[in-house]
Image (tube, rainbow, N blue to C red; front, side, top):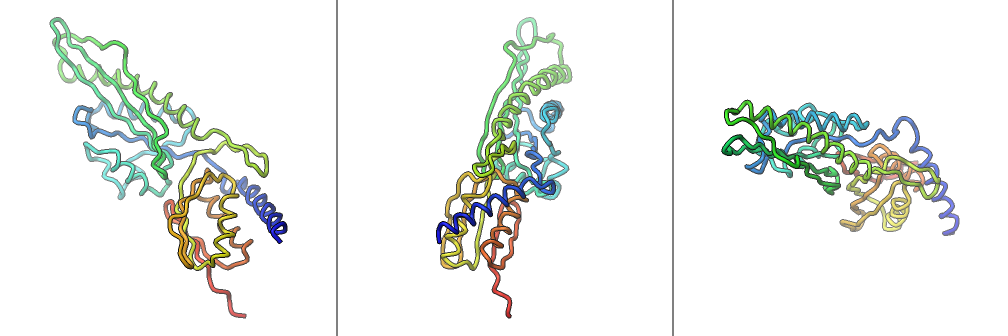
Amino acid sequence: MRLLFAHALIATLLLLSACAGHPAVAAEGPVVMVAGIDRDPDSVVRTNRINQRVEDGLVRQLRDRGYRVVDETAVSLGTLETGRSRRDEGEVIGGARAVTTPPVDLLVLYTIYANAESGNYAKVIRTRVTGRIVNVSSGERLGAFETAFPKPRHAPLGCGRDCILEIAGHQAEILSRDLGSILSAYIESAIQGQTDNLTGITEKQGLVRSYSLAFEQFSTAEITRIEEYLVAFSGYRTYRPVRVMQLHAEYWYETTAEAARMNRNLRKMLDYLGVQGRVAFTGDSFVVRKLPKSAG
């Protein structure tokens, strides 16, 4: 009996893996959002014009490497106060998780530091930019980097505020290109190809995503079978039971599958379990509810 189930399971997973390549839900790569963090009082405030030059430089580097970059203000309307200054990382990550059109996969955060000191014969201007990448769904930090010029820039003693901002802004823009190149390499490493154990097909889309899965009204025997399907889905990384009770089970699930593929795999799983059910999805949470059998 177990042998027959094993064959049925493999046949199911081969079907699901084949369906994963359907154009309707083909992987398009991660959606990236770039945002400035200026919580540190020594950092350049987001409303400073230097900030926009750095953000534009980072966005250009990421787009030139083929990544889909969304504008923070455009996608965060109604969910995040993008005009606020002195924001911390938690506030921005929370806002990114609330974005659903489209959902943000990766958050590129940057902070700018610039200062000018007057010497005996010239002003000394130092500029540096730090950056890090956060997986929005899991909160995992994928990489961090800091870049600065090996030597400070000197300006005449008469160089006023606008002069200093122009010099520091030019330096920061150059540094943003270097930072964008490094962070792009981190992203590439995070989504490097993986090979499906059943089909032997290597997929480019390898970014690990985290989902909350809840199953309602399933018996203990059905939950056991569901767990067997979950670990065999294409892209599976790991899962962890969060809460398991009679007719209710919740899991933390990590996979490289995008939401559309997870949604379809769960619906296909219900078909092969031979039960009627409904799959609901919001943000990074799925709720799968078993429905009573139709009369007759």
